[in-house]
Length: 265
Image 1 (spheres, one colour):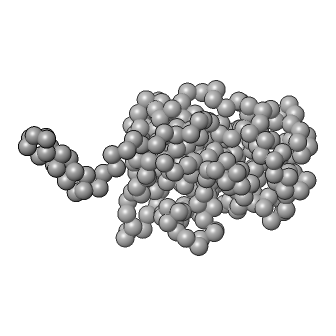
Image 2 (tube, rainbow, N blue to C red):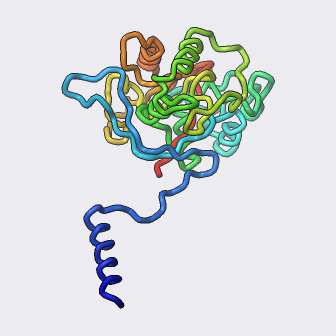
Image 3 (cartoon, rainbow, N blue to C red):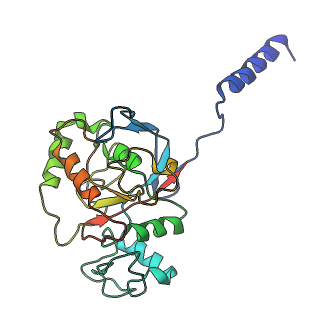
């Protein structure tokens, strides 16, 4: 072995030791999910001694919201989550009320529409069944901040106009199918304009930590909705989100509240 080659090998080894860098390829997202690069989320409200941003590690997020068809597979395999069997502790009396029966959809609940009338407990159980989890508020908001053309969607006037229009328009009686609109620049669909979505950390509107780091706080069950973290008092969609989230409990089910899943990478 030449002296030059030996020196190059020693330099490369030293670089790995000093940096601690993982030289293996980054894991790919599972089928139906999108790998989201690391970034940060700016919470709506923070206390003076709290950080102004929350770091978001690289993770995977479902490309589309969970559909009625997806959830039908789940309740077929997990009888205790069927409409007639679920305990009231885990879902209120309106759970899956738009279905015709435990294992039967109808015109109001077609397979390619987002599943709604779903509690946080049911959404979490579905995610675990899939080997996934619900996204945190910070993760959801970070991805939802992106417009179809740029990550910092707050600087996209057309995107902001579309958000304000959605927040000021009642949900239709029949929801559109998932994936009907444009994806954001990460390649993820329907974060806005279709349904609100559950996230893992309830009440994080007043608690800024990542739910996975706040152990023992089962009350941190939270819902995300269609916008990106507010940075000014004129951002009324962010305050609507804040108010809606603060009003929720984990057993609640609502006609325009669905979910999607996340996964660590």
